[in-house]
Length: 351
Image 1 (cartoon, one colour):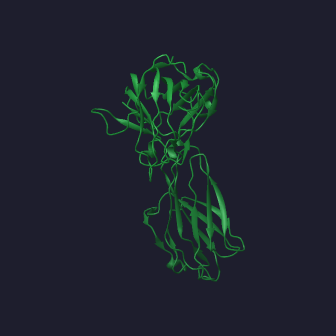
Image 2 (tube, rainbow, N blue to C red):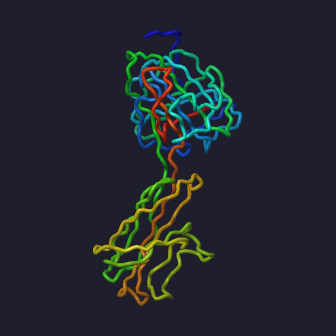
C-alpha cells in the first residue's frame, strides 16, 4: 500500500457534543430511528474509488454559514464487520443538482471548485459490534483538517476519494445504516355490522410522496358498490366534531369517522374485499401530512339507510431521503460515475 502520510487516526465515538457544537443527522427523521437496510461498501470500503454524496438543503438543518468540523456515519445495528485502514481525502462543496438532475460527470455538479477539508492520510475504520436494538450508538466520526462553511441555500456535496486500504486495496464489507422514507399507519374506530354480521375493516400501506399507497378492505358486504372517503382530519369536518353518529339517517350503529374532503368509487368482490392503489403527488410539502380513510358500502338489508360504514385507517406521508450518490471504482480521478438517485446513508454533521 503506497501511503504518503503514515498517520493513523482512531475512530472517535459519539460520547456527547463538544461545547458550542451542534450535530445534525441526515435523514432528519432518523435521529432516533434505525434504518431499513445497510450499505456494505460505499463510500469508505469499495476499494480505490471516488464517491460523491449530494445532500439536499431541504431539512438538512445545518445553519447558514455553519462551520462543519466533523462528518460521521452510523453503523448498522448488526455491526460494521471487520474494519480496515483506508487512505483517503475528503472534499466538500455546494451544488444545485439532485436526483436525476445530478450529472454523471463528477465535477459538473460543483457550483464552484471543491475544497479539500481532509488531507490525504490514513483513517482507521473500527470494527463496531452489533447492538440488540438500533440505532447503533457508536457513531464513526471523521474530524476534518479544516472546517467548511455551508451555504444552506444550496445542496451540500461531500466527496470521498479512497486511494488505498489495508485489504489489498480490494473492497470489503463494512455495514453502514441506511434509512428509507418514514410513513406511519394506524387503524381506528369501529364498523357497523353488515347484514351478514361482518365488520368491514380497512388497512393502509406506508407511502412516500411520488409513490402509490395500497389500501385494502375486508369483511365488507359481497359484490357491493360504495365510496371510499378520504379526509385530512378524523376529529372535525366542516366544524362538526367526529366521529358523528349516523343513526338519525337510518344507519343504526354507524358513524362517520373521517372528514369527507375527497371520495373514490369502489366495489367489493364476491368475498366482500377490495384493494385499491392511490397515487400520491411527488411534492415535498406533503411530508408529514396524514390522510384518513373510511368506506361506506351499500347493504340493503343492514338497516333502513341501506348502507354500512367500515372501521377507519390512516397513513402519514413520508419522503424518500433527498440525497444522491455518484460513484466510480478503480480510480480517484475518475471523471464519470454511476448515479443512485435516492441515498439514505445515515450521515452526521457537526458544526
